[in-house]
Amino acid sequence: MLRNGERALRIGIIADTHDNLPNIDKAVKKLNEEGVELVLHAGDYVAPFVIPRLKGLKAKLIGVFGNNDGDRELLKRRFSENERFDLRGKFAQAVFGELKIALVHGDEEELLKALIESGAFDVIVHGHTHAAEIYHKGKTVIVNPGEVCGYLSGKVTIAILDTADRNARIIEL
Ligand code: NI
Image (cartoon, rainbow, N blue to C red; front, side, top):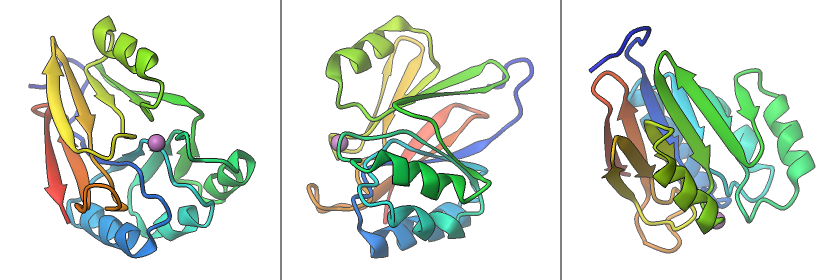
């Protein structure tokens, strides 16, 4: 259900791409097919060469750092080379009307737990565990899209969030 000031928006959610270029290509293709207007990346790109590989995305991209993102200066530069890409730091907040979304990698467990328990966000996106999961805590939807790299789970997954009904779903590629 839309609240005041909101317009329906389809958001793609990815995390933990970890240098897997063929899987990144698959994710970009699927996100474009799904017609998302915005993509949130919860971190762990790893090498900066991953970022130009995302240039085929038709959507805007907002990212945060993960614990395996070592060369932060070069990652920032690669993001800044694309006018639709925005690397925020360790935390990003995206607000659409009254819908508030938090984006964080999730390696800092105490921080993630506090964010979830705060009730301050409608949606909290994180990665890091490489395990796809969507659950509710109070009014908050927590979305972990799992891993694009497929290294730990053997599954390549992304998530899609429709703001019109606040429905999130996992898609296996
Ligand atoms: Ni991580």
